[in-house]
Amino acid sequence: MEPELEQAIGIRIRTLRQEKALTLDDLAAASGVSRAMISRIERAEASPTASLLARICAALGLSLSAFFAEEGQASPLARRQEQQVWRDPETGYMRRSVSPPGTASDVDIVEVEFPPGARVSFPPHASAHGMTQHIWLFDGELEMTAGEVVYRLRPGDCLFMPVGEGHVFHNPGNMPARYCVVLDRGGR
Picture 1 (cartoon, rainbow, N blue to C red):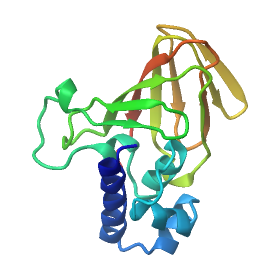
Picture 2: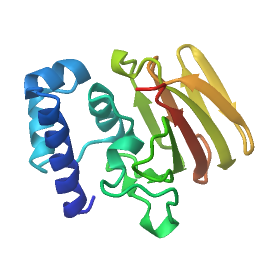
Picture 3: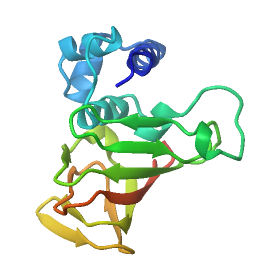
């Protein structure tokens, strides 16, 4: 990950935590991420994985898309070259925040390119309850595990699922999977 992005992530987490009057211990308890790890992320000494960052964001009442949204003046148009892109340091998966930032919408749209063989687990977390998502596969194949059920997606398939109950993304194929996540924060 680029050092500037690591610093921006750390600053944003610290700012959001302080705006909510949360201590490191409070955020650790709410997210299930250790106090030490949150502190290292805030100081840009560690790059959070997608799973860790999602848990921290959920505890702060945000989706990953809302977290990465550029602050400033809202616009109804988000041009591709201006959309925030983040790469997971663990799996190499790339996520692009497609939704225009700063709008009043509870829906976030994210484009993902998921490398062959990659797997990311998002454990159940109470702070994400009420959020739902659609996973719409464009290219490749994707195996989604929600609870005890495994869904095998092929191009054109769309899966609806709650976010807070935990799930696993896995690309069992030999080519990248490209898909869209349409996340509804449910009026959060």
